[in-house]
Image (spheres, rainbow, N blue to C red):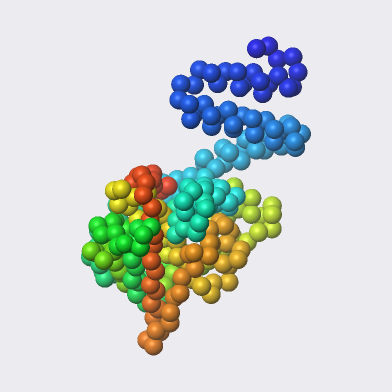
Length: 295
């Protein structure tokens, strides 16, 4: 199609979609073109703004490394991650769910541990945490044999992949639920932390005068054939950033009750409900660990 006027551009691109053999791919790409072109028209995007936008996309790629996923971080800061999660869980967004953002810090290959074992692989000062959890189906029946990945930041707010001083896979582990659907572990109480701001995500937050803090939480991913794999986060109930999480991840169903114990540690119990569906583990957003700079 020869372009005669600006309105022709959208129709020309959409007309070429007929060659796309997969129907869902064709649907996604067609909708992307329609909405993207409509956004450009609504904003009357200038050439300079377009060039800056391309620069931002390129910067996201340059900032992404084996130990850091800038695109996933940006998706969270725009609320896209949690929107996709809530649309696809809780009976397709019609009821509360324990599903939550996968986040940018899950790694494959965490060690398999026995229930009750510690997640600590190196010295990690902080208040002790004892966790006991249950996995149940939609009818409340226990789900035995589910694999549960667990990971969280240290009390200074760093995941082990960000922190060369922590041992590899510190504060990470994989557990298998018992006949009653239970699993448990020992660790330290996580702390809230700032998400990295030395890339495009930081520029986005600064442009809106938003803070970069996340409330303290534990991460879980539950996988069992016959059930939809879910990622989850359980938040500390008195964290000051629950209402303004920079990644928009906090839902009412995921605020835990971290109970202070006489010895100064904490105990947490939580029940997860999983739904029938595809048992597919997601692609890990990171694959490696940061290393200390050469001296």
